[in-house]
Image 1 (cartoon, rainbow, N blue to C red):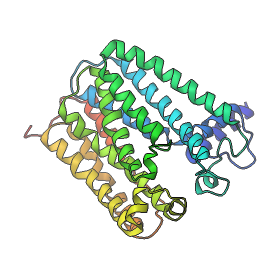
Image 2: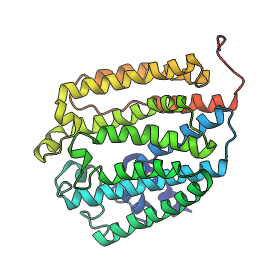
Image 3: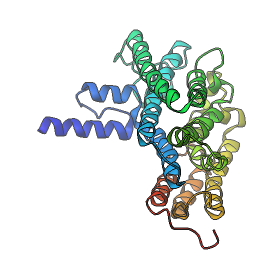
Length: 321
């Protein structure tokens, strides 16, 4: 029992830090949580849940089996994406023993945890699982599902893979915005209901903004290292101060979009709970006014709570709606 408790503590630590705790045993589960960067799966899970909760709150007929399959497919695709990044960043010489990426978490091959062949096989297995899920959902909902999936796959693979390498061309951040917003949220809504009204595209933007802001912060922190390696992320192209200003604008933009969508009646009123995140927003804006921010905004959790309340209490509306 004590061994199991110790392993649970290790897995919790990995999910919080993407690293093994010092001196901890590298059991198979902990190993693959690190290799797949499972610590960031919550971003994808949140996108899928937002799409599902928008579907439930809309009053449309929801197929919960297809919804569950879509969310599982998104998380598996995120795992595949992270491993693809590991593989190609190493192949093109970006990930090295002294590059920033390898310093804050173990690289599966550079750290000796996996061989290149084992990492490649894990990528193939993850994509095979996603292909099976895709075939089921295309059969159930039609070819539009494949459109969402292949658009996401293209961004996932060519985020780092040559010859396109979106990350190197200042297109990585827009690609992430599209993936975690319209593609994941809109795609999940479509799978759950078989429809995709226009307001869903707008409702997908706030969380897309938050995920992009997190990436902006990460890339701002790596401006010097990325510049030396010829990686032209948007922060590298813009420069430190303009990049921090763009990140601040993105964080602020989250709020009027959510509040406006609620006031118009596209989404239920409980999402107005996001205003509770304004004190944290102010703190983060202050941090982004100085070089190398360490804290990311956390309004996404409040948005998810609001959408859940909308789904549980669908009869509540603002008085003018």
